[in-house]
Image 1: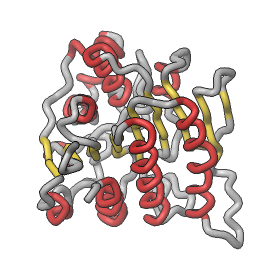
Image 2 (image 1 turned 135 degrees about the horizontal axis):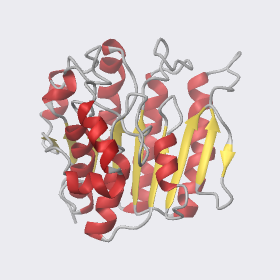
Image 3 (image 1 turned 30 degrees about the vertical axis):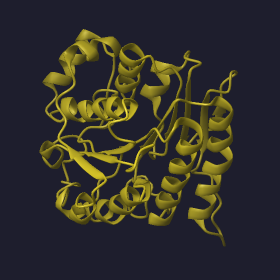
Image 4 (image 1 turned 90 degrees about the vertical axis):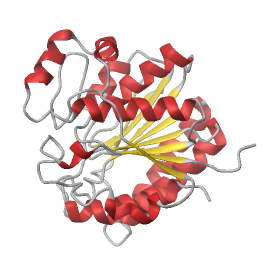
Length: 288
């Protein structure tokens, strides 16, 4: 039995430079703003290597990869995807128990042969392929709470019945087999009530029971803070909702898949809001 439950933090210096999600230097104060977290004995920080071209070709077409190489705002794409892939490997092998993965370029708008919307390579799809082919993992669940629909992830995995994808966005949809779900959070009526409470309740009612029925071996939380008040996808959320979701995801991963949880940072532009919401989320997934 493990004495320490270890959390991995994946960060590369390029994430604070010019790229799709770093034009405004949203991570300018990281990682030193989480210095107290990194000093904890069960928290390990890793600087990821770039994702391999061999793995990229398992998900994306050669022409798309060439286009990403030519795009001036995809400079962090290789290290961003590399961090998500490495974290998945280390969690699966028991080197760490869970992880928070910073990124410089997003992933969920990236399909097999297209990219955009501040996304270059589909990082989570690459991590899942890598775990399936290299480590015999099979069933995965993704909770996507970025402000926008994860269309690339949905396209890649739409026919995959071993992949539960629940996306909190602007549409309502449930596939025939129940493994692909959209939840319209922009229609939440917050008049006279707590928007954080309503959003968290949707996580409880729309994701948790589906995950329990699906029984994943590994859970990804694609965490966007672009839904925060004042952000570009503002639906009025505050740090309270992200903390509560982190608690839910930690508990659910312990219940269903031996604690295998990877939190992947997604959308959000403001440095101030990043500083406000990211450290508390990391603290919530660290087990004492």
